[in-house]
Image (cartoon, rainbow, N blue to C red; front, side, top):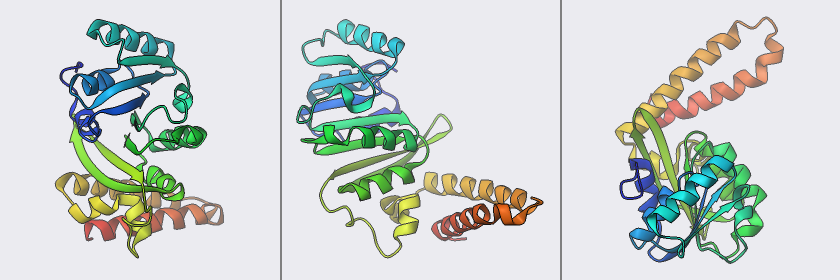
Length: 236
């Protein structure tokens, strides 16, 4: 992967950046995404944010090598603290767990003033991201599920709007698996949720073996409910 040829998952993120955006890529690693976005007219300017020293230096070196110092600023900081309110209109956060993405959004939500689009790519736990978006007045406008190198990723795009609009009376299920992904049900969707169902069935069997059933009762109910939802999603 380089600034001219992104991985499939980062291409999926890049394809959702509106043309001529002012972009902030949080957890930018080698700054591949902002460099690609600027080179391809997706972003007029970009900020690459990194909290760790190694990736921060790697991103700075990459931007210098690409000759994009005037368009891309590399900043060291934790999450959204690298931007100021009103400074950018599109934020990308890719390659992290859903819980970490939610933590970044929650801690920096005051920095989202002026941001019109969020493009979020959780490796796991996408349901946490959907719940955060719903609770903070962001409307889920697009979802994609894809597989690359044996791993399954989801790309969620949100804009300021009507957060309830994507959801139906099956909101609990749709928050878990994705309202648009549930409607599409492609092969990767079935692969992911059949795998998840098998894992939950193993968890339930282990919980049944616990000596103190009262102590595990709540956990067993929670896992059983999630399994019921997944089976509904995949038609089992």
